[in-house]
Image 1 (cartoon, rainbow, N blue to C red):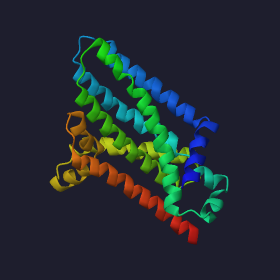
Image 2 (cartoon, helix red, strand yellow):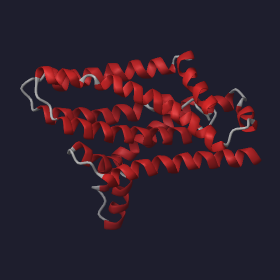
Image 3 (cartoon, helix red, strand yellow):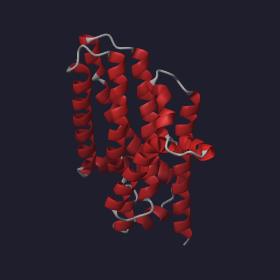
Image 4 (cartoon, rainbow, N blue to C red):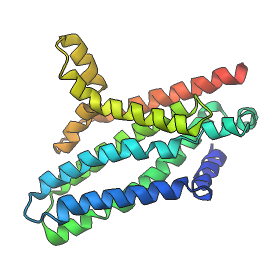
Length: 238
């Protein structure tokens, strides 16, 4: 697993994908942060911080597929997939190596971006618990997005298709909460809200450390990683 992890981590900076993701994320999040917090000094810092993270969820839904779109689809396109399948590495180790490489790039970029909050202590008095709760919630949500993207990348050899479908699915997990409000049938509405990432993230935005939501995001990511392993298990023996 370690060799695959290092290989994928290095690949992000051999190709432009790593630079594009880091640059676009830091630029967009920096603009959002400046507009909501620094350019509106009279606004309530707690409210604007929460709004910032809500917008950041949508940014991640669009940008995180950049990290996963090539992880498996590129191997299928370049016909190096068989080499991976015949290496003395378990399928779980292969999948986890690729997944952890994407999570590492995501986490490091997110940590660098979080230094923006130092500026809040210069210009206003932010609520640290609100910031930390939102950081935890959005990090877990992003890890779930990456697991979805990894699974979809394993289904196709076209990186564009992998990216577009990942964006579609991740945005759907956010917007399904709004769809649920339009449904009159109670049990359907309950099911839709159960799958809604917006509902699960809401407690973090409200400064609540929801253990149920933490378990949900971790379990959601684990399910898609398991499905990815099953895809390659079937492919190995086919």
